Image: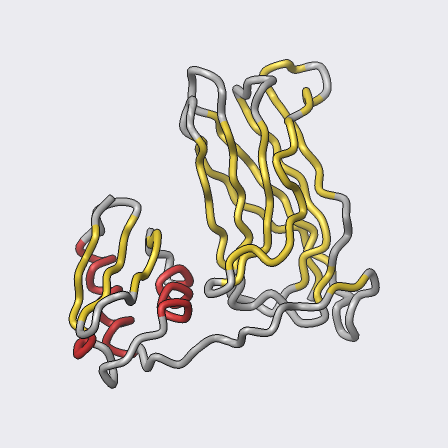
Length: 204
């Protein structure tokens, strides 16, 4: 896992907030794993892989603009009734490949004012021992709510190579998800990669 050690003077005012910087990098689509501010004059950014030239340029611009301002730390409140204005429904989704025999985590940053109520995931070439989790993640606070927690995949219809899992707990936040992350974690037990497709029911 590549780790970059950076001087704090490379930010806008010589300060960083690890949670908000992590959020800024994630929202830009960069493969960041963590931001560590344990040093006096430096901080570390760990990436899941080496950055491309374009991604490195984007990271430099984000660092130069970062002010060290902290994210809000109050946890969200949940309810079953949609907030006022949250009446338009749209199915949105994403997909990723889960590595065979490993645990794969995929982060989907929410960059719109959306409410997420429920969803499902379909896994192609899955193993019946596989399981998955789906969480709402605050960049600074970590997971703040699980739609699914280590749920095994069921066979989808008659095709034993396709698994499905559904989130039906209908949790809705009083405030929208803009700036939060939908995190899917897939544990594979098979010998071939699994293609995972996720669909979410969103309201705006």
